[in-house]
Image (cartoon, rainbow, N blue to C red; front, side, top):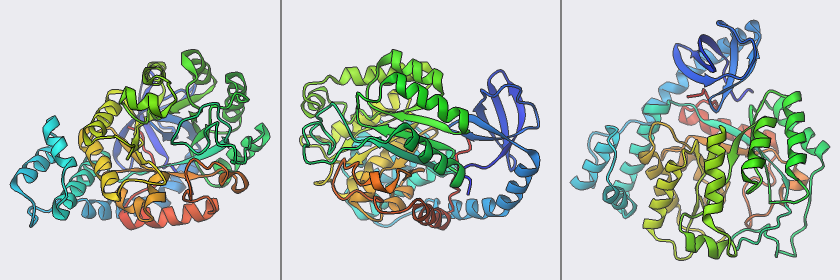
Length: 423
């Protein structure tokens, strides 16, 4: 199963190419030398990552074509907004109608949506977010893999299970060969086209070591690489970008400087934001967001976090609950839905593993409330349970095959295609 659909290059303008998918045109950035009009390619995250032989591409497209349009029909049906819904106030209806029309909502209107408690009004909020997701981004759902290669961390963030002061945690570091083997299994055996390499801030994995590792992965595989190794500064980011990394997953957790300092033992929020802004300037796709349910966190603070995420030119919004004493499912869904209303045309919004740990139905609920991305854990099982950032984490005992099977069953039931077609 390939987590991408091949498309045909129909136009080339500098580094930007136009790609045709069943008559739908998308743009992607090309870094492949000698790419020609008429070539078939795979794209992920708006990047061309691989050319595909024409015969193979045509066979794949023939297999996908009927299913692709069947899924889209299901998705359109599920994403319709009802013309009227009993129990929804006129004020809320007007706000959501404005959002559905693509108008930018005022801050007080967004705040009003966070205060909703009426089930009918909440349902209308989620349906509006799902409508906007379908309207602007169709039915593609990004399916990325993540490899957690070390649970060592020099930091002592109070909410994190792999913090330095957790002396009862069994620590591990995958060897370079083990990481390369995990990447090979994910890409060559299971068809992943995008992978996140994640660890704590582990001094053993220096920028130079990561540079060599990423170069070796790119030499062996056509895959979009995201890094998630904490703060490494502009020079480190530049070096890893030159090695072949194209995405940065670095959550700021909270945009409240005082709360951030309390959680991060005196570290400054601005240092983290500087890494995110530097990464964007260097060309990285940005994956960031915050925690939901922090002690002392207000609804106003959560709204500020979503607005900050958009300000950071974020490609993928990642908001998850504080665990084990997390917020209610309802609050997490509000954050996902309001994120979609704030950035309807561009945001990829992930249903985090944290949310899935909080609520077994999180993936379905989140995808029906504006989300359009999921991440499967492809860390080898013997290490996965040790990356214990919070208790009883979802998917720690599931094989990759089991995760793929349940994910595809859910996506197909919702009319979603497990693809990332670019922008």
